[in-house]
Length: 218
Image (cartoon, rainbow, N blue to C red):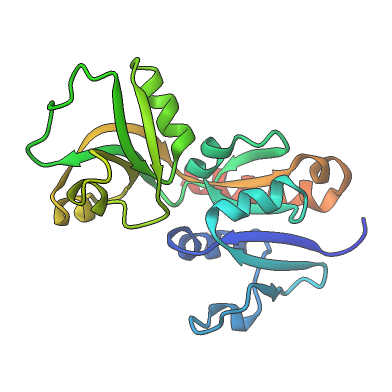
C-alpha cells in the first residue's frame, strides 16, 4: 500500500446526491470542495491517504480504467458506452436515476417506420448504434456533447438519444420520447488491478456496498 488513493467524481447532476453517500463511506472532501466558484479539479479529503478529482463524467471512467484514479462514481450510461475491460462496477449506489431514450419532434411519430437508415444526434454513439442494430437499422450518429434537443429543429438529425429525467426539456423543445433504451443509476467503479493490489480499495467497496444495502433495507 503506497501513495495516495485518487477518487474521481463527476461534475453535474450526480454529485449532489453522491456526496452524502460518500460521507457515510468515509470519503469527505475538504471544505473548499463545496464552493461553487472554486474551479480547482483536485481536492484534499479528511483522509491523508486520499484525494478527490472532479472531472466530466466520461473522464471519470477513463481515469479509473487507466489507473490514474483507483475509485470513482459515474452513471451506468457511461459504463455502457465505453465498456472498458479494466473497469469494474461492484456497487449500484441507487442514486442519480434517469433513463436513456430516443426522442423525435412532436408530430413525427412513426414517420420513419420501416427505415433502414437514420441520422441520430447523441453523446452515446456506441449505445445508439447497438440499439438500432437490434432493430435492423443503421444509425448514423452525429456526436454532440450538449444542446441535443436543437438537432431536429436545425435539420442536423431526425432523432436524438439523450438522458431523460422528468421529460421537461424534451417538451420545452418540441420533442417527445419514442423509445426507452436504458435505465440508469450511479455506480461505484474501481480499477481492477487496484482492487487486487490495494486493500484500501476493497475496503471502500465494502463500505459503499454496506451503505447501499442498508438504504435498500430501510
